Image (cartoon, rainbow, N blue to C red; front, side, top):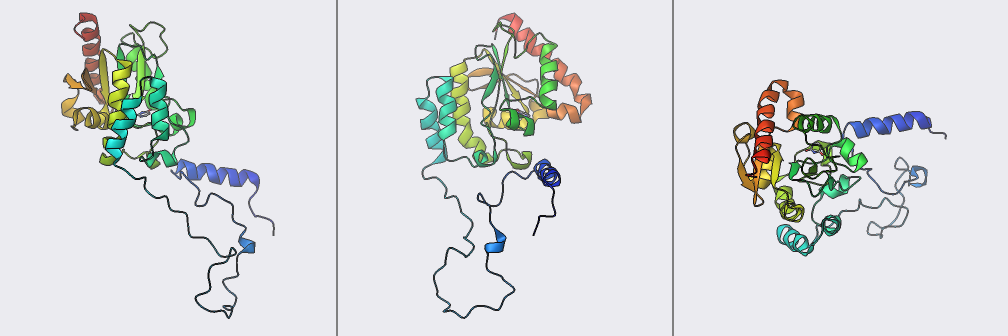
Length: 270
Ligand code: URA
C-alpha cells in the first residue's frame, strides 16, 4: 500500500513537529510495520515462555547513565584542557550531560577569545543549534545591537572592542527549557575553565541561568547592574536579551548597565 503522505507533506509534518519541540525520533532504525506480527490475528499456540524472536518488537533501547560523579568528572576533564580547542573536545566526550542527546551541534563560542569582554548566556536555542554558533537568533541580533551601541562587536578585529560569546550549556535543551540545577552544576567546571583560558578582563552574566552558575544566585531584577565576582573576574549581571524582547520597557535598565560596562572598560579599573 502506498503511503498517503507525499514527500512534501511528510517534510512539512516533520518541520512542524520540530517547531513544536520534538528533538528525537522514537526509534533510530526504520521499522517495516508490515513485517510485524498481526496483533488482530488469533494468538498463535505456543508455549508462553518462548524466547523472543527477531520478528518481535525490540524493547526501546535505554541509555544507561554514565558511571562516575558528574561534577568530579567535569572538574577532571576541564582541568586537563590547556587550550580552548581541548576544552571543546573535552565537552564533546563528556558523558554525563543528557542535553547533548537532543542537540544537533555543540555550540562552543563565537567572537574573539582575546576580547576584553566575555558574555556568558544560558543555552543555545533552535537557530544556534542549527548553526552551531551562540546568539544568532532574534535574541542574539538584539544582543549584537546592544553591544554595538557601546562600540563592542563579536566581529571586531581589535580585542579592545571585540566580544567573546558563549553559553553555560553548549547544547540546546529540549523545548528550550532552562538547564536543571544538576546540569548547571556539571557544566560549571567547564565554564570556570573556559573563563580561565580566555582570560577576559570582565564577564557579563546574561540572565538567571548564567547568574546561577556564576554567582550561585538568581533574581536578575535585583542582581542586574550590581558588579560582582564570577570565575575570578569582575562580573556584571544583565537582563537576557530574550527577556528584553518580551519586556521592552526593561531596555532602559539594560542601557544603564551597558553604560556601566563601558565606563568600567574605559576607566581601566576592569
Ligand atoms: N539564548 C542564550 O542564552 N544563548 C544563545 O545562544 C541563544 C539564546
